[in-house]
Length: 209
Length: 209
Image (cartoon, rainbow over all chains, first blue to last red; front, side, top):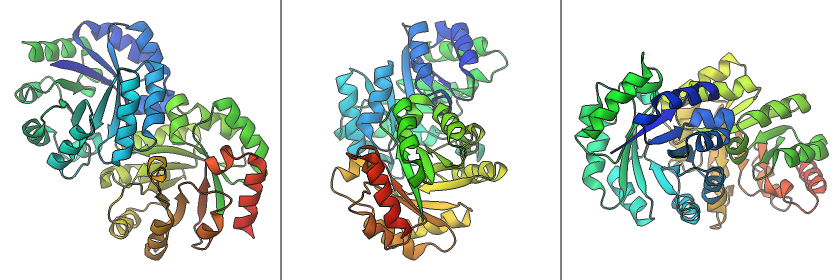
């Protein structure tokens, strides 16, 4: 089980300092969508150079132009790119093709997908590497957690790996670990923790023990 | 009817030169998703400064964190931001709130929305400014055009304005004009035309006449 740190509502400078501070506890550095919107692919390049032993995920949430947009992040050095499960199959295919060219991985963000089991089957058929359970921040604010969807997903997948995101923190990590996802994604549970290093350490210990 | 120029697979430098060249014929400069992925909000700031009399649209295709992500583009100077129609209502609401604060406009990209009439009703209820018919480049490659959806949309809307995108060019513009959308979006029909200025001029004439 890997720990992915999602960097969302944070400046470039603070993001680098934070990763510096927690690097021994994390496996994947996620350049979150809000950082992509603000800075483009610069954070991918900077993090790759600064932390060459970490994997980088560019959370593009691709909805169209799969090959082209995936390639932008892959050229910048991303090891994983995300595409939305709600998009059409041709866009997913484009992402898979681009990722193969760069020996990188496609993560399908299943946010707002209605029928998880049937969409997961299709995603596996199209050759994606990961399907990702995701309850967005707007839905979290309305009280939803990704736990129910993770249960469904962990029962459905046959060959794709699973990651999970949506308000996970030190307190809730054991419930997620129980379903044995391949990657656990934590954002504000570390970035907005009183002590980010302690939070990262505790979550790391919880998933590795 | 306004003409929106979508800048997608183009470098920053070429984008500025192109807008310089066609500015008299266009109303809205769209910083397309591929440019956002590459450059973040820098193109929004640069275009706003360089062409203060044009409106700027940031094609964020927001899927989550509506308020926060919309605000990033609005702070940078965007007059319009886009959110995906397939996302949940809370995210749309967040975008509408942010846009109100900045006296800007929310455009809902209806790409991959299944039930257009019912989703359009909901979008109008949530107070969005525009609904946008959009057949993505990956679907265009499979032979689809936005014309059928534009017909449905133009029959359904009651208060929202309508824009349309998806492979529109000099040849096809008359078919779109017939449905009287508020904004026609042209990307490669101008950016990849043999003579971009001539193409922009011809499309401008077609919609204004």
